[in-house]
Image 1 (cartoon, rainbow, N blue to C red):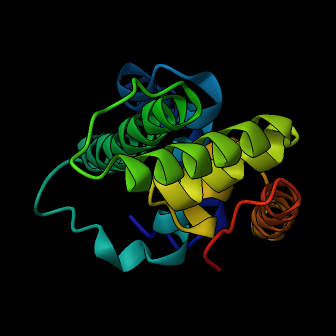
Image 2: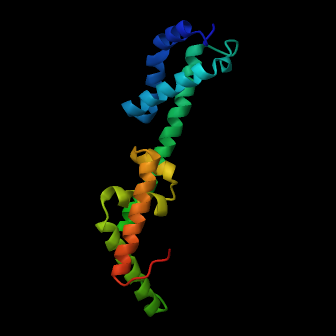
Image 3: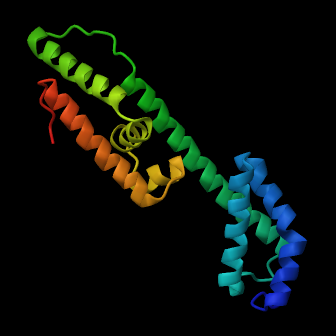
Length: 179
């Protein structure tokens, strides 16, 4: 079977697209992501048809295995992003006061934390989310973009604008912020 032939490929797509979609959907539980996985699987086959070796197994099994693998990757990314979102909620939430051996330093840290937390709350939601995911969630701008579903440039702009506004708001309150 020559998968580099357009008509053969079209036939293979029609025959296996539902199975590939179903394998992806069972894992990601999201129709849009399952469609993306399906498209990605068939695009990979179209670009590298020689990777499929009919002697090693059936084409349908090969395609569903590719879909399952890619869907698991997306699911894992979502799990990591969920943990980052949980960290965001912790950062924005009020901290319980702690006692320290040096109460003056602790008071200064609490004031700085409070100023940053208040400044974060004043940011537009998109900028706040991008900042928290990148700085406290440990995500790259590319990961933030994928997590919130925006282009990379938009994610970078949100991070940069949010950081600038955060700095300005905290500085206006008299609290120093490390650059």
